[in-house]
Image (tube, rainbow, N blue to C red; front, top):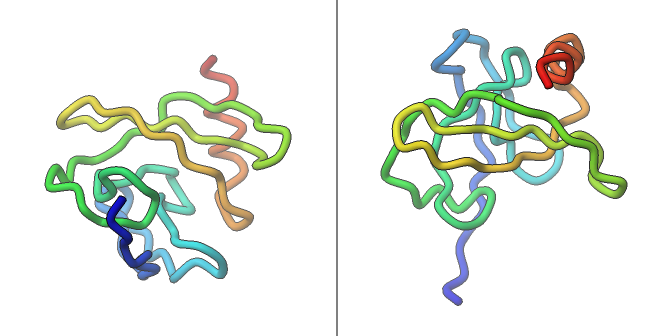
Length: 102
């Protein structure tokens, strides 16, 4: 398998316009305010190899005993679903709201 370089970068959310600083660990893959993401990664978190660039809506939430809260995202453009680990600085009210939907 081809190796890739993880890209950890700050960004402004395309959904709610909140500025998101670089992650303290790994790479930030969703907005800390509204939990939306962008379809940037193809195979591995941080690979930035997708050509879709659609908004990824948080649609579900699950709990992993080792990783904590897992946000389920679905691309509004192509329909691909991707799981993302929540971050410590995520808006916990949005996490709670997402958990109430299912």
